[in-house]
Image 1: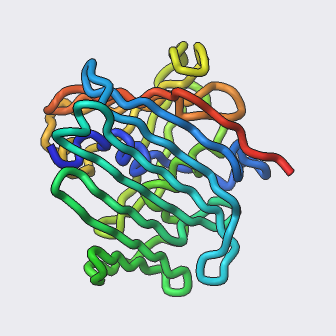
Image 2 (image 1 turned 180 degrees about the horizontal axis):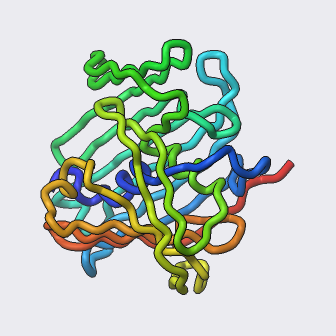
Amino acid sequence: MRKILLAVLLVMFLVLPAGSAGEPSPPFGPGETLYYDIHWTVIHAGRAELHCLDDTEMDGVPARYFFAKARTLGWVDTFYKVRDTMEAWTDLGVNYALRYRKDQNEGSYHKKVDLVFDKKTDKSYRYARGKLQHTLDQPRDVFDPMSILFAFRKEALYKGMEFDANVSDGKVSVVGKAFVEDRETVETGIGDVDAYRVRLDIRHLSGVFKKSKDARLYVWFSADDRRLPVKVRSKVAVGSFTMTLREYRPPVRG
């Protein structure tokens, strides 16, 4: 069961694509926070949070800083405890990744990953458990599994759109693809939301999705200028997952 509970959250970050530089002022910014409930079939299995924190620096370069965490709840927590965090840094325009960190604590499984993108050489260096394990040549505009979500939100959506972008977890570098299928109303903790349903191409993904012949992954984005990821749903070999927005706090505009 390792890595299954948070597969929806991690995969959403992995394959969502970005387009052009887009809007001069993105719909997100420091202070924005999204809170989610995670259900495995009908079981309320956990919660997740997604934050855009204050701008900072990464190796001397001005950077946007994103942070996410997820955990199990209730009786699920007693037999399979999950405490995961993810961090990502991009340039201020969110045009490419600078660094990505993941700290997984799932049951008896514990792993820390540090992925560094060297823009001088267009290479990435993936460290796991403190040791360099993978070095890859990367395209200039590559994103990590987390920052790709925010890059996607810079783009205006419409039914029938198709997207692709470079995404890497440090072990492989792929072109993620997504398709805007339809527009519909989604029930969330912040009320009914008019949203676009986006289907994700997950053929290149490993783990639970790779083992499922009929795996499906969908993300719903609000149809307003915020383009909030309000819902995620997957169907895999072990059942179905749904992640729904429970609470939203907008960015602080100075």
